[in-house]
Image (cartoon, rainbow, N blue to C red):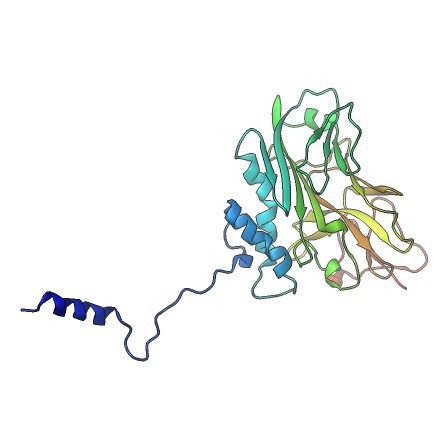
Length: 296
């Protein structure tokens, strides 16, 4: 009969790897493949690191499409969580709150990059970065709702390839103002064709004369991973900032470009003139509203 000591030795031998056989190890978890849709603070922080890590287009370690979808769906996640919610992280500021649809006044919200968005009262001074949501937007919502949930998000997309699209991957100095996106959604509804457009003000210093500023939104239907589009938006550049007026709700930004780059057409105004040529359709850059290449 085997002794307890002998049984222990036999068990130890069975647990040890055989000669030439390595003990299997779990590979490092690559969060930049964006394979999960969990929004706890641990996963949010992990995914935010990809804004910097994903710097090379086509990298096997980054799935840009999955990561962009992860952040675009975050507002919908917030809508389901509670009556009022604030998120305050270095890379994301968000506010979710209930609003009455029977309002006699427009709604204003601050978009200061360092602060959680907040509602600005009628008698307050308007902050330099802000959004105005017209009262007609809420009155036109379907379903005769008396209250709807609004989400306002400010997302810092960093210097990597996320939310840059083909135009901004050329290395020619073009970019998104302050690498900042502004997200707006109401009641998890697809809001388009507003009779009165919403208004976003992006503050900035006076731009150089050779810089083009264009109000855009992220269009998930363009290209393989999405791209910027100006359809339904107008751009008014002022010395202290740029006013974007758009007829729908989604994620917005202000694009900065220099002569010689692809310019997004500002519908319905046609920018053609001397030196302007249409972009060939096979280039993959032709959008619904038309885009044009200005030679240098």
